[in-house]
Image (cartoon, rainbow, N blue to C red; front, side, top):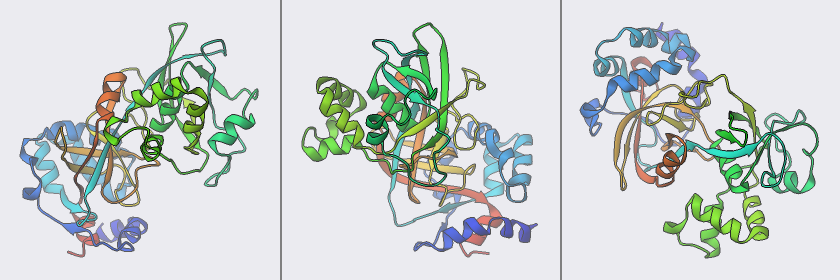
Length: 340
């Protein structure tokens, strides 16, 4: 079993050991606030995706999770805490599922298209930039429009979040999920406004950006195009309204328990203990169930806050330091930390 586990995990482990910071094994007693967390909620979220993990590594763990009546003991018995990038300070941000106004047909007040992925988009390569797509008309009149948004900034931020719900002018609701992107790296328009001296860091928010773009339409369009990354969507109405949007594992993410991570360092599906500092400290066991183009590094996580404006306001306040600790099955944890 252990030999098979190592072989299955070899590619991911190779990525780990090829980095310049050896992962460090610590104890559960080193996790600040561990005893006070709701471990049952963490098990419930873990079960959303554990069946999709590699059976050789995670299968036995997943089977026990389904039967456990002591959630805290489940984690403490079958996992060991591992810190990737022990000398680094974590950066925590937040994300949410936006709800925006839209129409299934183009009409006055609904002018911004939300597109399906074009068939010629190269896999793994770069395509046209946001400016080239919007100004060049390469997608126009091809039947790729899913809907038309009322606000270009709302549509822009839905692309950043990677999913969302359309509140249609006829009273209907459509949920969109991530389908793909044009291959260009994300650039923050908020940071660009700070660089230009328009705002100071503490002043920038989605609402502030939206007002600025509305006030200066021509300059606002250029500001949005400063981010060359462009996201395409797909309709995912098979997900019930009460469930969260689909994450990178094609399963619903859970508000306050799912995070987006860099899968080069944190395996998708793994439990991750977060110690987020800042104005609203958080000590909680999360499950790594999503990714994001801006989520890069050993100590980097994006916390999912839920759907709608309230969740968006919570997510927008988060840009905090701290530490993240990945819980791995014992054999795997010992192997990658060199403690076997």
